[in-house]
Image (cartoon, rainbow, N blue to C red; front, side):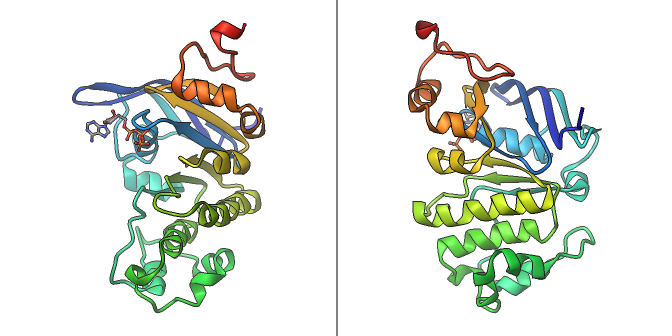
Length: 250
Ligand SMILES: Nc1ncnc2c1ncn2[C@@H]1O[C@H](COP(=O)(O)OP(=O)(O)OP(=O)(O)O)[C@@H](O)[C@H]1O
């Protein structure tokens, strides 16, 4: 049995008012792109922030290549190979593209050439301040900064925020290509569901903090009713082999 790049088991996370993610089981293999879908407030961002160590789990476990992350801080997890592109991108308005890519974190030596290889357009804007880039270019920069660290696991939160679908359709294949070529595992939180499913190998749907559906991306892409009812309906349960049917259809 191969070791999963990421394995989450029975994860429960919450805030002061209570648990918002409950009993989550998720795996990502090396080179696999996995979409984490669900309506607003379902717990997707909370899950990503817990994987990268920004939030603490109440219970459950998270392993990276079989290694338990419980004792690692967010910095330790970054050093272990987790890169998190947050919602809102996290760029600095006045710093140029080249300056962003040269930023050293934790003594790492970022691979700037690799970024320009995946996003050639950024090379043409090397000296332009990030604040003057288009939304799509800013997102390229945010993803590029993560790729420069050659991550083993890439977490991308709402890449499409404020972007036209055409731009998203240009960015997602780059993430796919990086995963294929490097063996990096990817967790993609995305509201552009059809675009995410066209990119992802598998997808999990979260509803109110629990997984209600899990299947291959391709299958979910072609079963719109099942997907929609997992967002809005009741009566689904995730299974290891695929989704259960809605209770009223079994
Ligand atoms: N810092 C916080 N303190 C308290 N509650 C929070 C905090 N962050 C998120 N929540 C709550 O936790 C729940 C899950 O939020 P989360 O941001 O993980 O959802 P999401 O699926 O990413 O939603 P969206 O698609 O809208 O970003 C929501 O009810 C939200 O209001």
